[in-house]
Image (cartoon, one colour):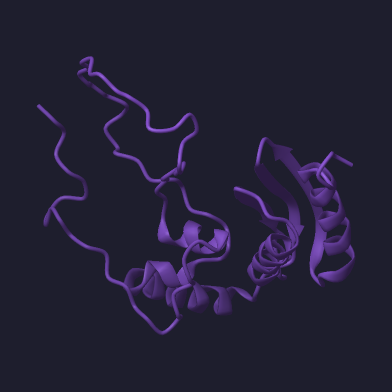
Amino acid sequence: MGLFGKSLEEKTAEAVKSLRGTIKGLKSLDAVVEGKTVTLTGEAADLETKGKVMAEFNKLVETENTLNKIRIAQAPVAAAPAPAAADAQSADRASAEAVAPSQSFTGVPLAKLGTGHGRTESSSARQVSFVRATTEPAQVLAVQYDRYENLAALGVVPQRPAHVARQAPRPFPGMRFVPDPR
């Protein structure tokens, strides 16, 4: 115990122990403390359980940042349908994906986004004078972008209702990607 009560590590360990025994669908849970940031890892039965673990942990422990890296357990693979039924299901699935690709989300994240042109970067730099207002930053933000489906799986944005068909924007009609730079 620290001079002013329990340390972040002690509070985190107690919260993890408490959550392991109380949340149904939580298969495993661990936490790593780095500075004032806690990273939760483990496995949950579904997205709802993953979100509940994060919410309950944040009620028990005050951190500057809590990262939820809890995996969602893979659903068991069903037996293969009869060949005639498989063809009908494949056709139904293909037509559904053509209308609304986001509706076919199975909980497995899609590939990360990228430019498709490789990693070509250029930047210029110049020196400027800077006087800091305080010795510590007032706020630290990290911005990352990803597919809507992956963000929904992490609990960052809500899941899209199944009845909402989303048509992808077409910024370059007639082409799949932006033309290569010259």
